[in-house]
Amino acid sequence: MKEIKISTPFIKLDQFLKFAGISFDGAEAKEMIKQGLVTVNGEAELRRGRKLYEDDEVKVDLGDEVFELIVK
Image 1 (cartoon, rainbow, N blue to C red):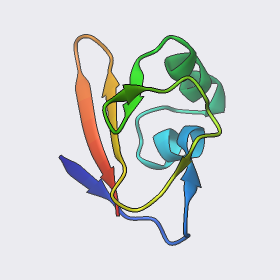
Image 2 (image 1 turned 120 degrees about the vertical axis):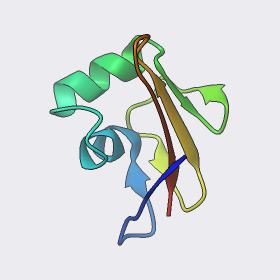
Image 3 (image 1 turned 135 degrees about the vertical axis):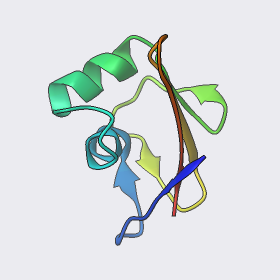
Image 4 (image 1 turned 180 degrees about the vertical axis):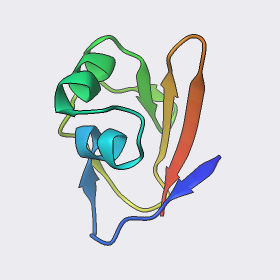
């Protein structure tokens, strides 16, 4: 699991995907979330504005590639 350090108390899910380099832009992040490819703490998340806090775990399953991240 890869740790992604943030310097704020929280970060929104779509911003986190961009910050972590999983998506190129907000539109791509929004589409990944909308398609149900993203889980937060083991549960599917369809809200791009979901606030992530320290120790939240994010998994993005793109089929051929799976990213497992933790907010630090």
